[in-house]
Amino acid sequence: SQQGEEDPQALSIQEGENATMNCSYKTSINNLQWYRQNSGRGLVHLILIRSNEREKHSGRLRVTLDTSKKSSSLLITASRAADTASYFCATDSRSNDYKLSFGAGTTVTVRA
Amino acid sequence: DTGVSQNPRHKITKRGQNVTFRCDPISEHNRLYWYRQTLGQGPEFLTYFQNEAQLEKSRLLSDRFSAERPKGSFSTLEIQRTEQGDSAMYLCASSLDVTAYEQYFGPGTRLTVT
Image 1 (tube, rainbow over the protein chains, first blue to last red):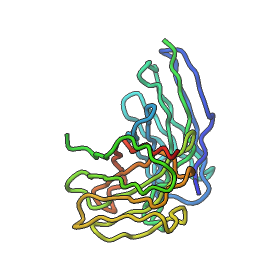
Image 2 (image 1 turned 90 degrees about the vertical axis):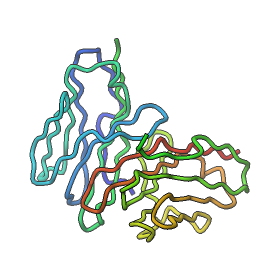
Image 3 (image 1 turned 60 degrees about the horizontal axis):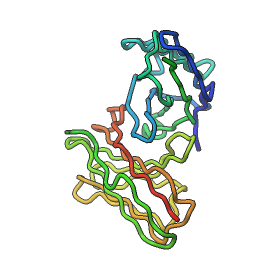
Image 4 (image 1 turned 120 degrees about the horizontal axis):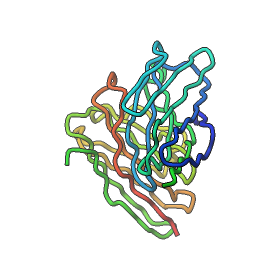
């Protein structure tokens, strides 16, 4: 079963705008990761945030984690056409031997 | 290229036929995972290996599915007597070890059962 749920399911923005998507999960986690998938291809790891961290940055990406609300957000600033993809959050836990559980994803379309 | 590779990239087969997919992980990675992804959904865990040992099989994997990782290197996923419901993208990923939480994914094998 899938642990995470992303919101919104789809997002369309203009190039240069920021894109924000959210992920909620159900059970305690050790880490939360965000992956990107371009149409019909494999997933690419973007960023990992540990359960004891609240915010993390990587380039134009900003991830927050609120373990009390069991939720995370991914912000992509100054979006580009190349950011058009599906974005998935994935959680793991020590009790589950760090196997990843993915949400259904947010499809982001960046219009030129 | 030292990334994860999968072959074939696409497979079209008739219902009832057997198919086998191959995954070559990043060479020093001990862990290897198989996922299945259907349209509009995230990947779902199928099974994983620590070196050559298969640690767990999801209940999604019926008896028609079998996976191996001989000598802890490449892995194969076989589906016997394919059904139309098996049509999906099959993704392989690897990670360095249990404490390396990031997984590196291959491009996937898209299976279409007609």
